[in-house]
Image (tube, rainbow, N blue to C red; front, side, top):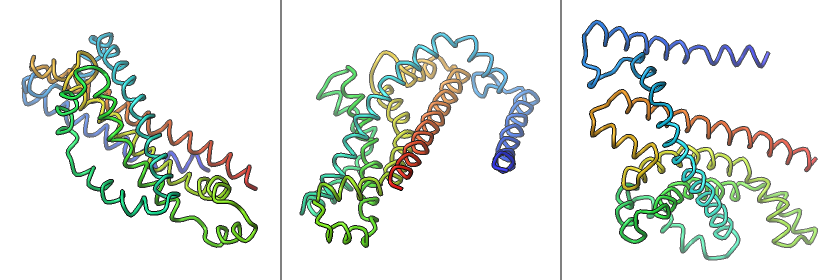
Length: 255
């Protein structure tokens, strides 16, 4: 039954994508559109296959800084949310600054980070971390605030310490919210990595796109876009699988 529901829910978008690609191919073919202006889907696939070794090399470079930035930013977001929740007065003082930090465009921070830290990997990781930490922080804080108050008061009556309440009740309860933030950060990390590579560097999908733009290779630009989309979907799916495993394990252990 679950498989049938999945098939019924999954086939409409697949059909739409196939129709769009078919119309795209026919429009380019019948309209005699120049390939440097708008390549056909077949041209994009062919070019992606031909240039796959170089695309794969740049993809690995993007994955490397993406994962490092995601881990650092998500870890920072979890720690920051915990501190704001546990330490009295911290949330009132730092919460407005947390909101203001997201009003600065990411692409505007890149040049400043390059001036401060040079053209190495460090400014890229910082930029990705800044993109990733906010969704995790906000989602986890929301999870802490949604803790069951009856269970909270019950644990207080039993004499549980703040540390015990946090690790036994508040943190497990916030796990679904935490993973919601992680899934958002997973897609943001790919975007942040590409933007960081646009601003400086000698490898990665962002750098690859800049090279192809200078050469008016729209087909290779589309190849890079498809790889970026695939990375975002794959990373989101992996986080969703991890959520399913951890939340199920946590429920079984608690019961």
